[in-house]
Length: 61
Image (cartoon, rainbow, N blue to C red; front, side, top):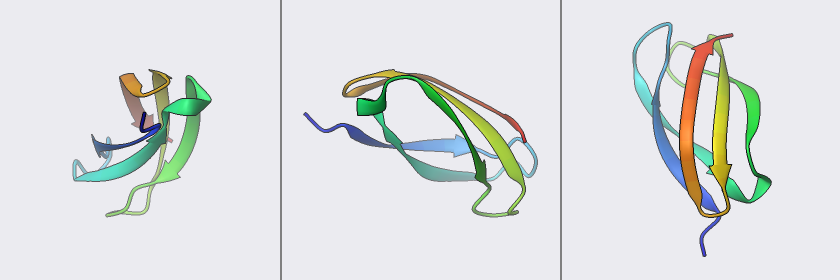
């Protein structure tokens, strides 16, 4: 079972999409990441279980 998933998200500030790696083995979690395009922070809320991403919510950070 692959616990690392590549997920495409959209920056809530510039609208560009890019991929992030989600570690589904950690269970649900939240993190703050910088956009790969505009470098502004965003809060990412990830709901998952081992091997499956159930939902992702991205908000301006």
